[in-house]
Length: 228
Image 1 (cartoon, rainbow, N blue to C red):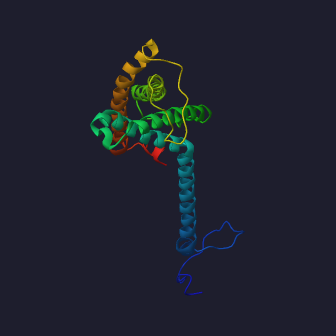
Image 2: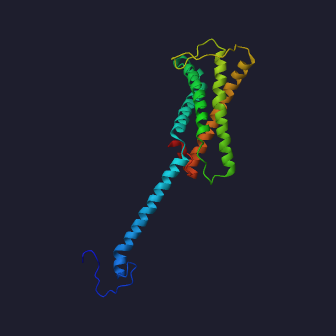
Image 3: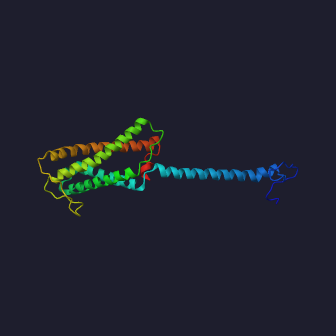
């Protein structure tokens, strides 16, 4: 017992809350108080972990949304680069069949992403974010969805008027629209496809810059919502 409790010589007992039993202040300080503090520390740590788990669940996009986002993003980057440099690549790397197939894939993945978004709302933006910045973020996302639909559609219409086959990565044929060269819809699609593609590239650079600003400058966790 002497190795467990401190020397009680000369110590006076005090009133106890335990049915009148005397309690020495030194015992309270040596054993009971640290134990209580340790228990409170564990409780606080548990609460923090629980809060972090809840926050991780609520502020991050779902796994399906993240998969759709990054798959579409990679395909878009490939198509923008391929669309700009396909003339320079020429016959060395026939990029246009891949460009067309990737565009059709982007279109249908975007439709799936919109359907998923309607049934699984996006996590809220940080409460400290200014109202104008939230408005800009929402407007940018709306513009992305519009371009993700319009750019592939214009390419599909433009290709449908040509004689070359349209396949999905050489696995199967993709149906063409019943249009011919010289029709207004074909001419509008041809002119709009390139311009909207460049606009898409500029918007993508703006989006990437904003995401990096949130991650490295503001450090508000916005980028982590989509990185998992």
